[in-house]
Image (cartoon, rainbow, N blue to C red; front, side, top):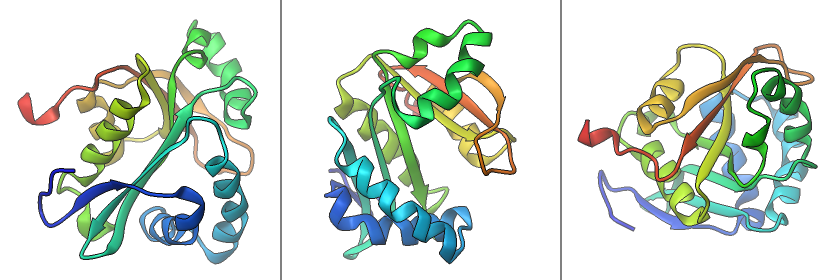
Length: 183
């Protein structure tokens, strides 16, 4: 895929790259070793889901960012948690026929260079679906600003996932995503 700032976006085998993607997530999201250990089998299960798409951002052979997602299923754990929040806001239909961006992380030194934008746009484009859904920390963060610039809107705020301290917002967008550089 197109190269900018020395970073290329390419398909990766999520199962094979699981340890590396979790290293990136640990740095980008501030995860400790115990959280990484808990997430490793989860990423392994996600790698086996039908329709999973995983992309890596590579700089000189090093993984500097990644994203993956899959067609959403109401039976997925994540969907069962967010469904009541979406239903309360009249958005339960956003669980069907949508591409769920499961994880998207970029190392801090590569943030602000368009790497995350390229990853999420490529994921959604490859999904072949008409809508995308994701969850992000419910605060004004660079990630939330990026998602809004791409066309995502809040569907449900203050979503509480088990064993998390911070609330999340569920966001959805019609595809294709907007190109924030053309604004």
